[in-house]
Image (cartoon, rainbow, N blue to C red; front, side, top):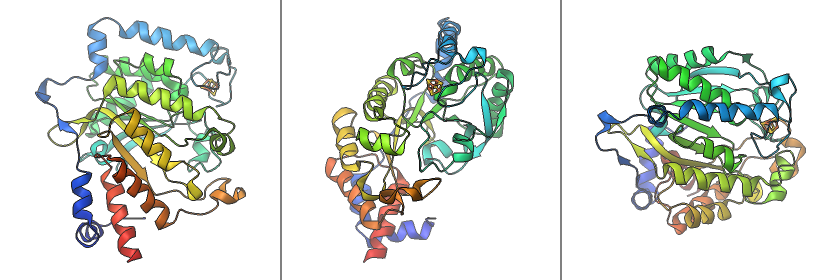
Length: 351
Ligand code: SF4
């Protein structure tokens, strides 16, 4: 649902939004000495550690354990695992993206690279031709590096790597090539959250911005709707705690562009399938109350979702409003501005 500027302003004044905006004011702080700021991967290179980290990551292709499915497929020899991804990166598109969170978009868009294939394969996937069918084009490491440089030249303030888990080693290789040719903007690791903590540890000192989903809090729901990924909640939570340890709360430059930090997404689903209240409690108790959290309202019945009655409809206004009430009650102080605006729109339409 599009939210106009008028919607937003009316929301603030007509529905208690002033109080909400105060309660949920943005906590990210501009970084001091931003002219001296360098992406994490440059510091790792200066320490002489980047190449070894890439070699370690690439070894996973011989018996793939890049995600919790741990298929063991020898992708280096042409075998594929659950995600069906080869050992070369397959890219569907790369372009500035203006639909991401405001600190990522800036004035020129977030420099997004959409990778094909996915290790989760949700029944409600909104990108199933890309994620399930693997549509896209296999590219070389040099070509992937050139995409990153092109996005930087276009004015994007980050490289937003969408569905990166199964191509993480390729991303590291391409980042180093691009860095040697002048890449100087942060990597944003935009993941569905089905990660192994040990692989997130490999990214320490390389990734500056983590953008994980936390989709479910109940393994049975994860199993039903995301292809038997029953261990999703524990895997995602463990990975996100590690991400938070590495980068902490969001830091921006003086223009509000994200430089470093954790931003967590959670899609509200019909009939409380996503465990939104438990998600909010978990964030408050395990991360920090100033964690950037995007509570998303845009669930749609896509792909095979119509075969599953509990998720075969959009969410209601009440389902989104209760989520935002829980966030407020839990004391979360750094909610995405569109979540706040959407709350106001729903409240105004209900009144
Ligand atoms: S990344 Fe793909 S091949 Fe590797 S363990 Fe996960 S699903 Fe299996």
